[in-house]
Image (cartoon, rainbow, N blue to C red; front, side, top):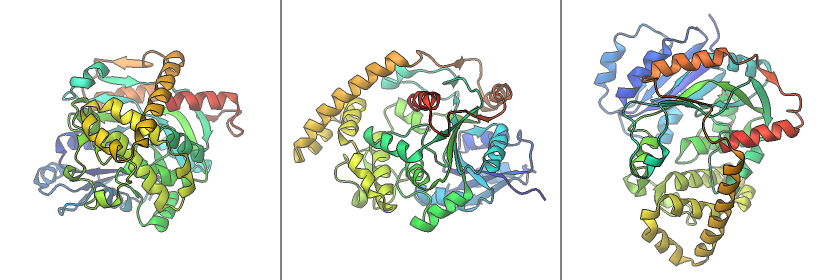
Length: 402
């Protein structure tokens, strides 16, 4: 029997519309060295059980926990079922390309514990661009940058510090199990240390912090390996409608004690900015790496929050009134952000490498992504990657800003 090289895990809750298509897409991956783990926390799972009756693919393994748990527990359960050498966690509206196995084999051969790569995007047919999101309307399928098969060594601890200086932004060059790939050995060391793979309310950022601190060798592999789906119910879809925001206690997927563990220097308002910042600082504390917190830029966090959520200005000003120095931090952060935006407009390409409006299903997106990946050259370490020469620094810097 072939050893399982790659486990693809999906924690899910009440989104069968997308999940059934994702499961169908897995059947297009022809290998016995991969498994697909579905960890379902939907109370009534009769719909997916009926669907799974027709599933003859033994690589697809379904687990159900009817009692409600928060998102980190559901993610922990998903990863705990995996037996592959490498693990990749997806959302229930994402899928992978078959070349993920080639990437996992390359990592295995080169003792790589964590691997980042490009993430093409697919907007599901029900995706909407409303309100503030109208100005961000994207093609149905898009690729940010050209892939060339280059492999670049990443200093993950440096990536943490860059995120800290930006107020807790999650970058493509920060390794993690979500939308990237991490060895099971690395993840088990994390679990042994903090009794979870995700020590924070946002699993992607919390896990990324731990992988950055724990991984012995991390790379950026320039290939198209997964497709990030954006549906109406996704975080991006909610953000486009101004709904990925609000009262922390109203977000049922957060831990029950979220207000008790919340960092008092972060506005106690749910948003992408605040939940990432909370997860970053919480994970560092739980991992015993509190020295990193000296670098955290609250000024950048405050400026990003008020810029993206002006409707919450009264709540934010009430937060600042408690400690007036927060106003100064916000002003400093706004100036810094303005300078950064100016620089990025100057150096970044004005449009995606690929935009396609004629791809209307996840399966079509997967097929096209396979074609793109077929054209990517054999993986190769860039000559200056080990010593982080000029080319590596330029490439990593560009990718971080995409």
